[in-house]
Length: 292
Length: 276
Image (cartoon, rainbow over all chains, first blue to last red):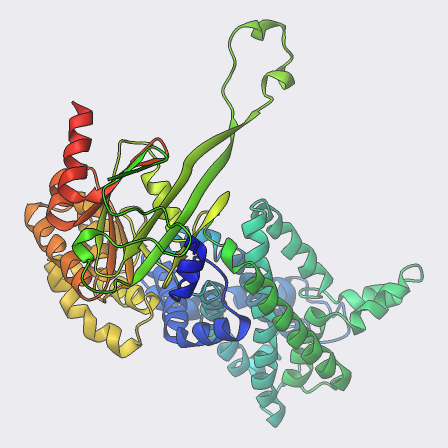
């Protein structure tokens, strides 16, 4: 009997071998307390040094909103895009943060927790998941604030409109669910890619900025293309581009504009696809994390 | 005593010939010992870029050429084999750079072997001195987080806090952020968190050296306790006193080769003899 046979016959496994997918997901699920607490504590520790602490979670979005309202509502004061601009920008920015933070911080979730990964054996998937939870918790107060202040937002700027509460606002719940599924997939993919290529963290600010301009966060990118004679074909891309659709849908139902129902189908397919791909993509390299 | 590949095995023949698996150490004979870790002809090679300026004909070289880096292979572990059983605490000794930590990292699965393999009952946990959990957070929150990472439920973690605080002797410091701790204090806390539950396999890398004498005594007692609960402990240390007090078997690693494997007293004496 060789050593290997001896080991296997005694029920030992090769160390670091990655568990089967179902088993892996089960183990990840059993650490759900860890995932939540890790995300929550990460958020707290980022604010702990400040005198106002967790209050910043509400203060920051208020200040953001003031600046955008001041610049786009008062200073520019024009209806450049044929609709209410202050609310356009604020919904855009607040929703966008959820994605961009999941991407940039998700990318660092394995490499940034090296000490933890190297000392304890637990499913590594918990770390990117915790990052996504953290940013969800961080953004939630600003989203709630945004919805509560929606009627007020409509009154800023030249083009005064009253966005009254409506039943469609409840669509925010399924939308956020689909959005978070999408963001989780993105965080998982980014986390693994950074392990292979650290330089990615240097590139990510540019990638997110590029995506931001392409998604119509602060200006309506699709109308620009639709209006142009030379690049009008680019506009058709936006019928399949999920980030643009997430923002566009949120703006529609929060302000009572007509929605494009096809967008719901598109984002759902995207979110499930990205999530499943992210899950598999991350799991395949499980043995690789912590080794460098 | 059998001589295999230059290694002095003080136990029964451990060459695992056909038909019989590796035999257990003498102190474990009498009942069927259960293997927990099997290391099978483990080789680890590092490829390192040697980036040092070369002296000599530097003056004639272009800037680019002088920066060319040579790839060098470091053969850190050269064919290590042993079997660790349940209820064993194994000391790992050897001079600096002999490959002790490399071996431990290979056992935890953090290093890919160039050839050979490590088999284990469960994935070992490595308790090292470096790296804190989260410096901004208080010791207590770090305890909860550490316990959850070890696989406890939230209730279990909250219940464990008190005993961990007691064991670490941090007292009122437990409410302060961990970045304010001294290296000894954070090592004590980490040790207390990691040993709060009984591990199947725990690797302790030099962590005992940091505490004061009193803490060292208690942590050694804790290690023996884990061992008695069917755990297997690997203890890497330069303190022969710690090794003598806690281990019943010692592996002596020298330049990436298993120099000697046997009962503590014999191996430690031989090691100390070689140092003279």
